[in-house]
Length: 549
View 1 (cartoon, rainbow, N blue to C red):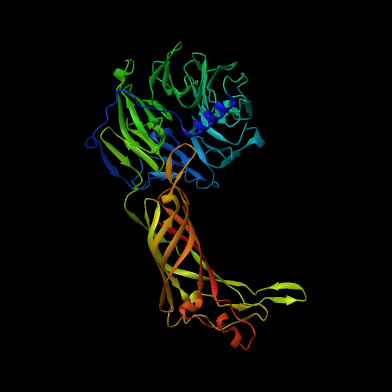
View 2: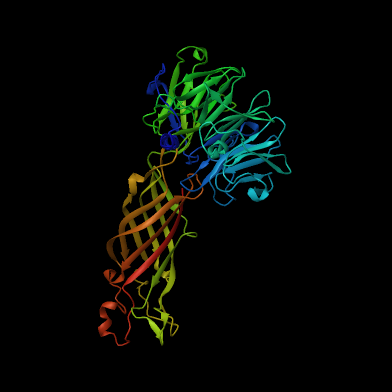
């Protein structure tokens, strides 16, 4: 049994839930138009929440390490509609967001607790302040104005002054240690005031006095990420219910205060009810391939029939956050951005197709060179060093070409007049200039090829695949002193602020300077050198390139 449980746990990590088998109607491509507005975030959108005055809040990791939270305000001019709300906070994995009834903002992270902003300043809450755990995946405000946090170690309740923490005390029905039963994924309050809580283990209800594990036919609901109460008071949730017959009977369920009914074999990361009574979900649809996911709509008229009508609005690798805006449009997120569907057109707020030109910010970008003497210097048996020295050179201008979050080209011009010459640290005298800057005032580098591992895509722990910032190999033509040579160097590229605005490229290139005719004090001529020393031919060029769209 322990082995079976172990295998099951591993499977749950990879698959939320899924499966087809419903009466579905896929809309033809011609029925939905797509337009692109190249202004929005390119983050993995974990959660989408309503803000005040019709605004929309968007939260999620930006890459494998960090994330951002954005506000979309439809009242603002196009191009300025998205505002990064966490740009002044150090980088963290932001997962959820809430604007409370007083207009205060709460930002949940999975690595550093919770940040709070009252419009004037930020405040940081962690376990040192009483929070149950610094891993926070959900933030919720109840009818009394109390703020609840779903953490990796139970629920935290904050009344504006202090925290009070709660852990599900029930004996686990499935997980032996019960740890995952208190790894909270989502929280909602129903009309009666009870809290419905999803967890990576067993979901439960908390009525203010006791915890009740959610069960169907004696078995608990597991891995519940989405819970919603509709206008009739029914509770909708998605999760696995037990482990019968050697299979995972997951899917979308409805609870009518007495009975659980399976509505669909499809799973759901998020669930909403729109103004028409239709139910919308995001999440995987096929248990055999969790990377196949969709935005799905269940027609209100067929919800209580044996075969609800399901329409796939859009399919792809990963669909997560979900919200109906005040104007009736449905917003949804996937691995690389946020979308709006108005019933006819899907608006992609981040253009993932075609090349985009990023102009290099010459004030924030710099190239540092490092050179060394061939021989070291000694004082008895003590090594004094090899005379290594560094200097910098400024960039004149340049651009990077980005396509689908991948670097595909670009060119850089370097102002050789700004280069600092090598210094003999023993005599503190500058050696003769390496470069003829009067004759060749500019050096250039033009990218011809960029290689990434695994096609630049990385599988992540929710089973989805997304484009990931990371290590690359850059090849291009380097022109110095009128001589052009092909070079290749390793680099790391990432989007700094999570929007289509700033890219940073850090790389290190090692060149043999003699290939470009820079022969002064070359180690190749060491034996002929009267000074008894030489400067290494290999020069290391460390670069930080900051470019903005």
